[in-house]
Length: 400
Image 1 (cartoon, rainbow, N blue to C red):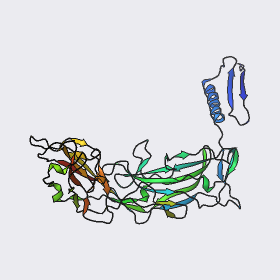
Image 2 (spheres, one colour):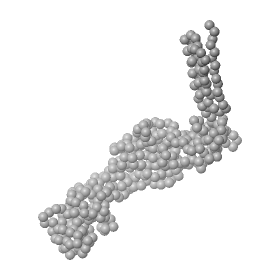
Image 3 (cartoon, rainbow, N blue to C red):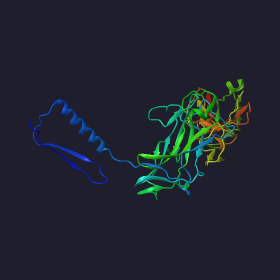
């Protein structure tokens, strides 16, 4: 039986994907096996010719551009660094940061086999630990409750691809310069309410790859890995027995001691004493060093950890911003006055009762620490009448 006509129309243009149109003018009488073979062949051809071609890029070594392979860099943690992460530090708080801004590298040129736009790309290399969640940029470390995050130019998470590079558009070659490189910051972050003390090992942390190339064909210029370790401590203190339940004698005063709203009696010391403190080494959310490809250059120091005291009166608050609480309700109570609280023996240190008062923890290992607190009677109304003037409050101390 004669074959019916099969016409195959090919349509193509330079630098475009090839397309096929299979036109059958009349039904084909063909065995199942032959039909299957023909259909399979045409499917393979469609897949092969339909795939877009990508440029192939690589190192172009010359007398001027001597680099011919990915260069490995090791970035050390700042030596002998210990960070304190008290229990009161907030989840998500950055506790340490360093910067990577490679400026010292071998002259390099990347060449592709077709013209196009070039881009920088930052990606992860080795990932020893998983991310905290599928969409998280924070990766686990070997210390429970501490994660690590890499950012490009402080705010953009990795992986990241730049816009097309000026001077390397519609080109087959591109030479990176130090001015193109965005700095990369890595930050240690508190990720859970409980943190285990120990040493963060660089072996548990990701490596970063700096790439250059055209779309879908990047060449790894630098492979950057952290080295060394950072010690994590979880310090705390005890409240002294005397401060655990204090009774402050405010004294007996004549109503003539008050001469107008805002005037008051002498300040009484109600400071909170902390004892048995372990050392608070500090932490930081700013970069302490920048790596240039050869060495770390110091850029900052650890900041002191802080104590935070929340004062909660049993009575009403008269003025939170001025630190004034009401005295206890009593049939024999005085009127026209309140109790004012301050972090110093003057109004310059008045405590805002709507939020925690804060101050630095010494980082010298002092076992005993004083949190300053003072109290006085203060006139709150135009007229003061004599009577009892007692008050009670609860304080809560945390460390950050």
